[in-house]
Length: 99
Ligand SMILES: [Zn+2]
Image 1 (spheres, protein in one colour):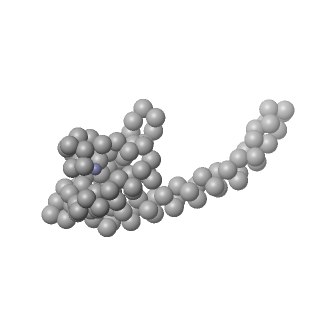
Image 2: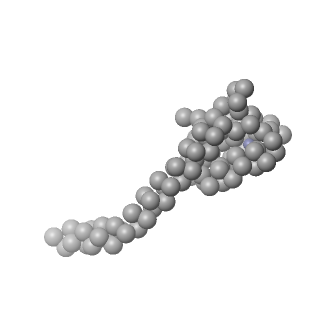
Image 3: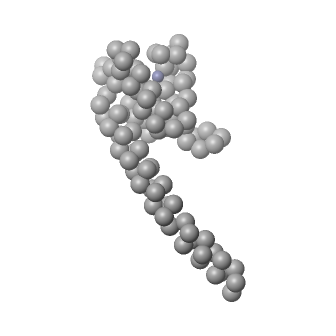
């Protein structure tokens, strides 16, 4: 699903795609990079890229920025939760192995 596409309110077409190593964010026909496909490897990079467009005076819908920001918050929470549960998973794995 795209974050934003070309319209009267947007000079940017950004979508999440999948690459060989997981998700990538693609700025399609990027105005900043000679109308090529510009790949961003993380959400943080994608957000920084949208800000670059804003600085260049391009129109970027606020919704696209808001969605990336909220996904970043979600991603951070998920990571910290996973880390705090990890030792328990490992213990469970060991006890299963001993049965
Ligand atoms: Zn771009």
